[in-house]
Image 1 (tube, one colour):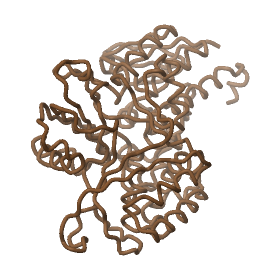
Image 2 (image 1 turned 90 degrees about the vertical axis):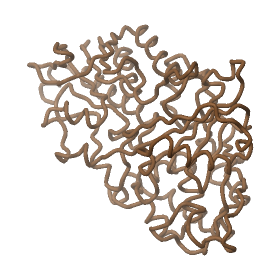
Image 3 (image 1 turned 180 degrees about the vertical axis):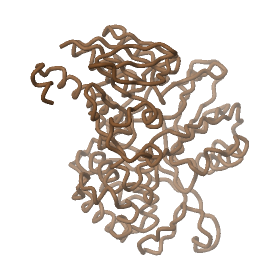
Amino acid sequence: MTARVAVVGGGLAGITAALGCADAGHRVTLFESRNRLGGLTYSFDRAGLAVDNGQHVFLRCCDRYRALLTRLGVAGEVNLQERLDIPVRGQRLVSAGRPATRQHTTLGTAAGQYADGAEPAVIGGRLRRLPVPAPLHLSWALLRYPWISTAARARFVRAALALRAVDADDPRNDAESFGDWLRAHGQDRAAIESLWELVGIATLNARADDVSLALAATVFQIGLLTRSDAADIGWSRIPLGRLHGDAAQRALAAAGVTVVTRAKAAGIQRNGSGWSVSVDGDCAAADAIVLAAPPDAAATLLPPESVRLPSNWSVALDNSPIINVHVVYDRQVMAEPFLAGLGTDAQWVFDRTDASGLGDTAAGGQYLAVSVSAADDLVDLPTAELRRRFLPQLHRLLPATRAAGVRDFFVTRERHATFRPSPGSARLRPAARTALPGLYLAGAWTATGWPATMEGAVRSGESAVAELVSDYARTPAEEAVR
């Protein structure tokens, strides 16, 4: 049966759902409230530079996101490491060799933690994998990693092996804090902050104490502990607006999808055996709806009987912010495409010179974007304060910045970047199929089993399509007894 499908939301989840429904032979209309597609992955112009709102990366294990890039015809517009290689710079932490307390602090900031009372110099290291099976692929990097002791390395290995055995589908593990689990498995402050959170904050957008053990186990099992090449890092060579939004416009048009932008859905309701979407005072009829809006918008639009969740589920799911600090220097200050920082607010620093178009200009210089996840304490600070805070930290991580001139400094903020992956959050994430026939949900915040990543968003769209296609493949008799 061919159905009229309305997709509400034009982020990666909505794009995936619209393409999947069209590929299955349905007539699809996509409604997006903004004037563009791509959701939270977008670009804008600033003084001739193409600026991404944030630095979004993916891993080799993000199979469905990479499949979407192929579907959009832009798989050739991304870089993907041949082998995981993360340059790391930061201050050495003197560890007592004991499991961390819950009140552990940021590296390099705890009073009296340095043996001579002086701030130590920044040191460098790398996390580079070997071409051997997991988890041995990181053994050489771990042996040479300067931020943890020999004893801590042995405890890290034991904890990693134990994490491989954690059942991510067990509700008891969702209710437990990852930080508590790490401390119970002998992880001290240095190990948590220089290894576990180096990966965890960037992928989960929360610190270990604020993360569900089940979600953390999913990230580490898939990304580091199963396939040796799973965590190889990929990133876009072009602005995200072109990689996602513009490419999606072309692909959707080619698939026969009607795309309506600047069209904010004000309500959805059942209309006999079908549905209607209220958009700008008009009602669009549909046989089925895929609601791919953020959780707060979805909670407003969903009929009360559609999901079996606590009444305040979207509030309880909460948001976790991300900020990006953008600095344009008058000369090259960093040779690597990116690096990770320890003991600093500058968690990850990316070279955006070529992607922004700066490399094609006569002005020269280098454009860096500093990505800061779990940025609750930074997101509301004035730009001037963030400048005073971040430029000296970049001086420590990248000494060449000390002699460089700053041409531009600005900040992008996503206060609602992701849902907060807190212990117990799984019960607040609904499945793709709702309790009402013909109504489906998509979004990285739904029950994908993944954190709020681009991969999770794409998987959610695919799940909604699978449910819809299954339902419309039923015979009338089968549907009557559903």
